[in-house]
Length: 222
Image 1 (cartoon, helix red, strand yellow):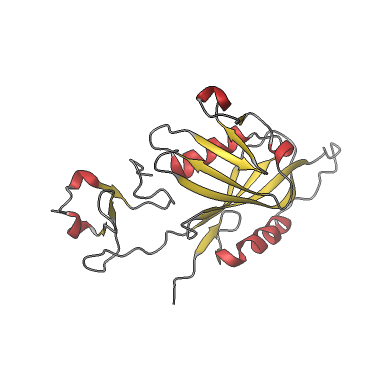
Image 2 (cartoon, rainbow, N blue to C red; image 1 turned 180 degrees about the horizontal axis):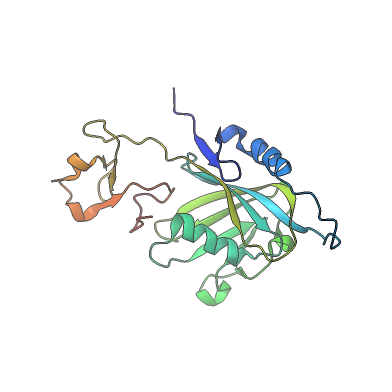
């Protein structure tokens, strides 16, 4: 039987399965909603999106995000790079309802592309499923979905992490201990610390095992 993917809710610090996390976060947010202040009068809440993100080919890596509707695709791009992807300043792109949005748009040499300087409110709604690519060579692909529309407290807010997967268990191909390194040269080169020493591809080809769908790709080290 394959390992059940679990993760931690950033709101209550509880551990839940991937399958139940969306439902849990929606309930957890309601439980933690503060009562409106009596004085001064309550300001209007801001609109936001509850986003679910996962690796396209590595679905054990997933996150739940709260993204203000006024945030841009550029903001979301930076968040994804910072937490999961950035290694060498590669280009990236979103594909939403058949339209491609690339940082810098067509001026970066990508034909028929729109700029990512567009608000999420203009391109997303509840149920929208879209895709993201980082690095057009050794590409890491993500699938994103708007799980629900939510309201957040008034005032400036940035994208925040609601939940993230626990690191999946990856075993050393040589001895079966937990892997701490991955070889970016040979196929299936998962290695523990002991087996990494003297690896035939050379230790300079080893990258650390990190909790990201980009593990072992390019120069990504977390």
